[in-house]
Amino acid sequence: MKKKLIAVAMAFLMAAAPVPAFAASNITTKKSTISKQTNVKKYMVRVNSDTSGGASVQSNGGSGVRTFRVFAQGARSTYIKRHGCAASALTTVLSGYTTKYKNYTPEKTSRKLEREVFGTKVWSANYSKSMVSQMPVSLNGITRILNYCGVPNQYVRYFKDRQAVQEIKSHLLSGNAVIIEVNNRKQKNGKMSSRNSYRWSSSKHTMVLLGMTNTGKAIVADSAYRSWSGSKQRIKFAKVEQLVKYMFSCKRSSDSVYYDSQDTSGGYILVNKR
Image (cartoon, rainbow, N blue to C red; front, side, top):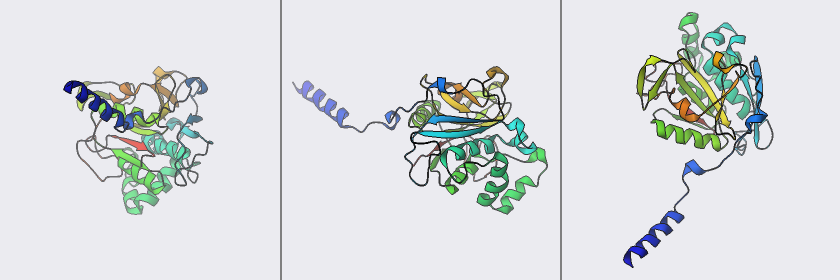
């Protein structure tokens, strides 16, 4: 009898417990609504999203939908072509989450917005270097720009694979984007493979996960060309579990707003995270 009472009490407590954040909602976009022909200079994609962000986070695609602009680096200026994946990813996010900056190009983001937010001295220190030495904006720099533009976000510097998969999936299913940094090597809980794998990057690369499809894959906004993806270039699809294998966690914190090192520039950003 005593065991039965304990079991009933435990069941009651479990039922009364708050629902975990990972089960918050289930917003998806039909994969069939996204073109299979996205090998273009700029692609406009509509993704079912949470647009209840209030005045600071406005949808420009209508209730429940955000419209994102995804850019091809290869069709842009020399700097963007070489180092502009992060500026392109940031510009894609701004196009879907703001009104003021929705028509920005990656060039305008790097030349104007970075300078406004970081200050002329810091901005000039990066862009006065030779082209090969100029660095892309880091995830830390991106989070600062998003804050400046009124887009709530959370920069997750450190993660274990299982936690990252759960958190990223949950956030995408809540109808919001995630900015990720990927590597040219696979990893498992921070332990890097000794072999290169160039599926998502020849070195380091920044991309945006715009949402989830009804087939359970992340909608990947990618400014780079990958031969394995055929005609699907600006938008690719992948399981979050597979993407996390190419991501990397920080080993230490840095305030640098431009890419510093693998140890300080990893992690991911949850966009519209209050």
